[in-house]
Length: 337
Image (tube, rainbow, N blue to C red):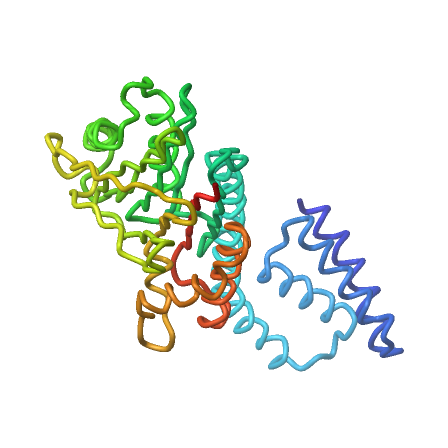
């Protein structure tokens, strides 16, 4: 280490002497490059002050004592600064590692969502799900059984970040593991509720809407667990009604039962599932009204389901200055034959 310091002193002596005689941009560039050498050898700020003092005394033996003494004060300042700087560097490195891990988790989280929209002859389906941050608390899924019935789920994990992602993975694999006879809405939510109650911390809850569409009878059966009400559009009357389903959020009580509802879906009717990131869009200090969401849907309902949800999203994010304050998920299923 002593030899390293001596070598650095000689290198710095040359740089300083050259700069003081010529005062060129090249000299400043050499100093910048020398700082990288100091970092490579892990020379602290206070150690460099000592190097500068030693070189200065060697180059200018007649420097006034007061100037030399001032380096004692500078050394004390730099010792405190050096400690704070090293702590800052350590925290920054840890933050970078954490952000890298979150990026990996966010990419893995995307694999939990459906890779493609199911192809159902009688349905036009569109979905958009955009996280407010890297990790999303919203989840949606499709399940197609052997009879061609389509199960549709939308959930909101009350919590953010990695814990929400872990809950999301648990919900997905719990749904995937259910036997076909347990895919009816009420029974499915009861099963998931037991899983959440047993495995999730009391501070976290999950809201969910789950429905099952039978393309043979065009009946849609659904149940809810404290989730944001959706909408149902009646084409023959050109009217929207709220799609409400009473039920406690998942994880509160192991014995919770979930009521099952059903609607008959006629040609042109469509079902809307959404998360509270849609209904809680803010314009200034106020939330938008649900009627405004219906107005936006009406504006684009002549388009395909996918184009519809994308256009509604673009309108709502524009109203918020292109900043999402909550995860946004909007799903539409329209009977087209």
